[in-house]
Length: 139
Length: 306
Image (tube, rainbow over all chains, first blue to last red):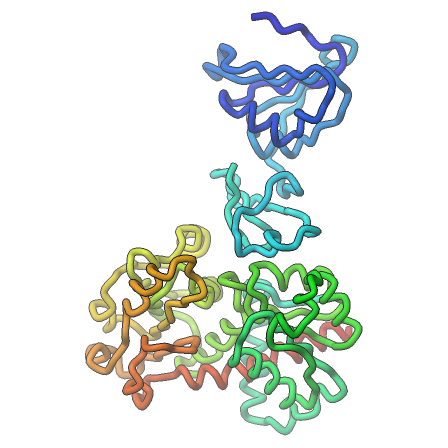
């Protein structure tokens, strides 16, 4: 299978196999009108299998989302067809307006204007909790 | 602006200072009777409460201050759809300090972010109830002379019992504490409380379903009610509500200086016959709640004035 190299944009590489769609959805990539490729289950020397997302656009993405979904993923910035920067993304300490609290008793479930904020409370186990009610987030 | 949303917002040193203030209020009430003259406490109770609201009101009156507020959501602008944030901003124009109870978890935190006066969380759903914890701490302090090296048993609804989680959190900061968790399987302490509080602070704890078996070990027994309002399913509530009932025969093997506590209201989880036992401390706890709320109001108003 051949997917063209992108000219100007972002490649999210080394995504844990199976997480690309979650990342695609949370990044809101379905709203872009540029070419976006999701490549699943690519053979990888280090990871066995991995997913890759290619975005052929300078449209900025929320790196916190990448760190939240899969801190093992890397981000490659491409300019004029050349890799200009390669970045690792750490898990963000705070995640703002990316996911919603699932606790029906949380104040965010009834007041639409409140920002949905989660804090990293256990980095080893990737645990984020709602800032308001402390309910654990689904990753 | 300093508010109190969670008991861990207060350092152990601050709690000790508030306990000292509360003890001084108990010994010298006249000294404090005009401390809040000209100040107004707004009690914003979006959920019914007798004890906590009246305790706050009594506390403010005994400090010489005044009280405004409402006791149910239907008599507030919330019934018209006003947000917590707007309510907090509005009340900041009228009062000097807010005590808020709300059925939604995190609502007092939202209020504190938007108010220009201190906000006290007077209970947010099944989440936090820090002033109950302050009442509990003063009771333990006055009955046991301190907090170190106590074995504290928690019995009943340890899953939804916010007072239990807050008190475990507060006690975890003292040395030599041992915790005994007594509950039916379905109402055990959530795993995150065990992991983030008990295990993280190296607090020895045991979990059991048998109250009588562990009774001889306990210095403090904290009973709780299985709360109907925390269940989505009425059948589950009915099945679990009578899991533990403390009566005099169950106390046969208890220590002579056991301190029996309960955040109240009780339904039937402590037999009325226990009330006359000198080890019953739950009505002292109510009184202690008022004194600690007085100490808290004083502290937050003094800090706001700086």
